[in-house]
Amino acid sequence: MQVEGTPAVFPLRLVRVPRVAVAGAVLIGDAAHGVHPLAGQGVNLGFQDAKSLAEALAGRSPLERAGDLAVLRRHERARRADVDTMQFVTDRLEWLFGLEAPFASRLRNAGLRLTDAAPLGKRLLAAHAMQ
Image (cartoon, rainbow, N blue to C red; front, top):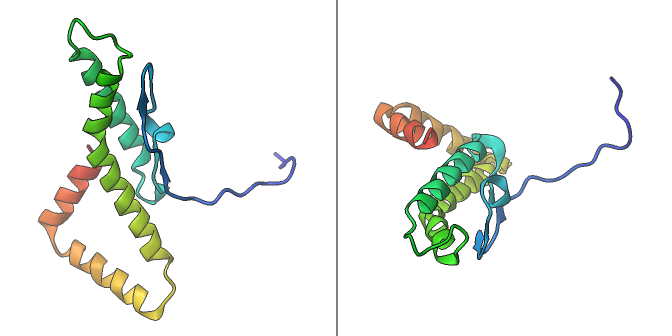
């Protein structure tokens, strides 16, 4: 194999959209939110988006159509806290691991050791990440 053309570089960054739902359409997965891939959580968020949207559509009243803004906004509200949390955590981890100040590596290592020494905390973090 051979590379054709000039490789392009796209910096990883936090992506937030103000609204994921409008009448007749809803964004899910990476179209709705971006998270730094360091935690590998983008696909999990997308799966949870699909589940939430399916639940919102299944739970609509007989008077509501699938594309009604009220239905899609229920999905949007149901996902907001989880998405915001994961975006915040991955963004801050990326920032922390990007610091090159002398104290930064000691702070990171202390935090990792603390997490490693708390089996219950590790299990809770892993359980949340696997949702």
